[in-house]
Image (cartoon, rainbow, N blue to C red):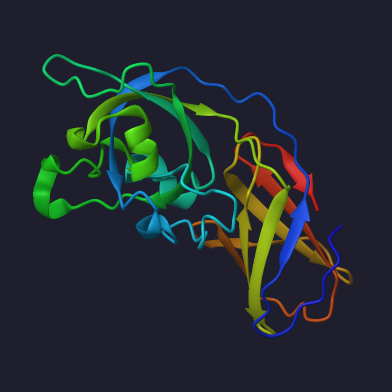
Length: 233
C-alpha cells in the first residue's frame, strides 16, 4: 500500500515494483514508420498519452506515436514494440547492420482526413511515427518513410510503476506510467483508508479520474494491464 496524503493541486509520485516477463508476439509486416521532431526530441514531449516530460519519466527518446489503428483510444499507451527496417525494391534506405529498435508508445499520430487515403496515419493504416533518434538508428534520414516489421514485446522499466496525482476535494486525476511487462493499463481502481475499492474512469491517454473526496486519506491502487495481471499498490 502506498501511503500518501494529498491536498488541493497535489502533484506527487508514488512507486511500486513490477516484474518483467514473457510478452512476445509474431512479427507483422503491415506498417510503415516515419519520424517527427528533432534529434533532441523536444517535439515528442507531452502528447496524447499524457506523459509530459519523457526524460523525467524514464522514456527518453525511445518512443513512438502510433496511428489510431494501433492507438486504441489511448489503451495502447505505455506498450512496447520492437521493429526493424525493411528494404524493398527501389526503396533501400535501411542502415546496414542495424539492430531492431525498441520503443514505447507515448503519443498519437493524428489522422489527416483532408489527404484522404494518402495520409499514413489515417484509418485503417498501422503506422509508427518515431522520434528522429530512433528512426535514424535503423534507417537513413533522407528516406522519410520506410516499411517495417514490428511486434509487441515486454516493457523493461526501472524504478517500478509510478503515479502522478492532481486534484481538488472534488476529483482526483491519476497518471499511471513507467509500467513494466505489458506496459499498457486497462483499468485502475482506488481505495481510501476508510472505504472500498472504487473503479476509476479513463479520462484521456493514461490519465484516470475519480470524482470522490479522498483528501486526508492514505490511498491504495489496483492496476490491471492488458495481459490481465493485477498489481496492488
